[in-house]
Image (tube, rainbow, N blue to C red; front, side, top):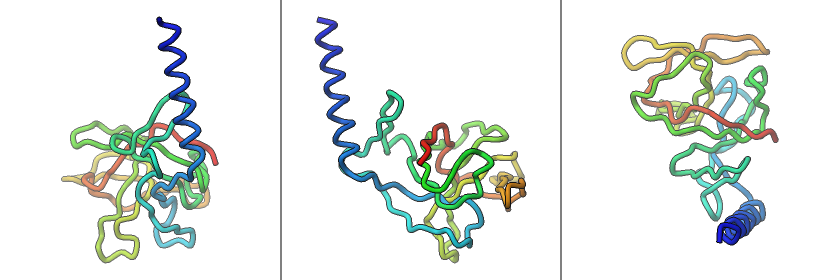
Length: 163
């Protein structure tokens, strides 16, 4: 009986992986680097077909996980390259952040030409009020970026897949 359940799980997993890899995955692009930089790709919401991603024996669901691709190369010092897929647990208010956490932040300034897109920053610490300090990398060097409203944090990266 246990063997039959195991075989069924393996078969279903194989079908899901096949369906997933058969169709192109379309995920949000996360800007790495200067938001006004020259490496900008339009954001596309959602995953095709199944709304899931299977990686290293685990299913990631778009409803509970944030899945996106890196656009730009400023996160190379952290091991992320353009085209890499990042997977993060969606941020919930009250979750404690730690220095070094990689955050997916939505650009909420309606005056920005990148309004509604995402960028990735390294968490540096809490600022005053609802603000947090973050770090970006310029030519491989750590640089303080402007503080961000914690309410714009969408996810904390916990996995990434090299392109």
